[in-house]
Image 1 (cartoon, rainbow, N blue to C red):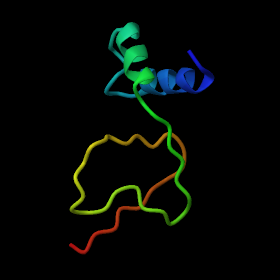
Image 2 (cartoon, helix red, strand yellow; image 1 turned 90 degrees about the horizontal axis):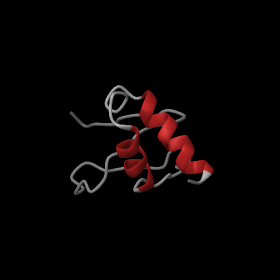
Image 3 (spheres, rainbow, N blue to C red; image 1 turned 180 degrees about the vertical axis):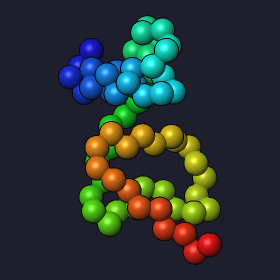
Length: 68
């Protein structure tokens, strides 16, 4: 496993959704995940877009902007 993958495994193991799952499953899940870096004021996803991914914020913060 790479250092990035190790960080993802650790993050998932601490997350409420994944903390009680089998370690091998968490490692398999982590190996299929990708780290992404977004700059300030950059959109992660836009309303109406087709969702093809799930995002976890490992560090930093996001703002949800809605017209509603």
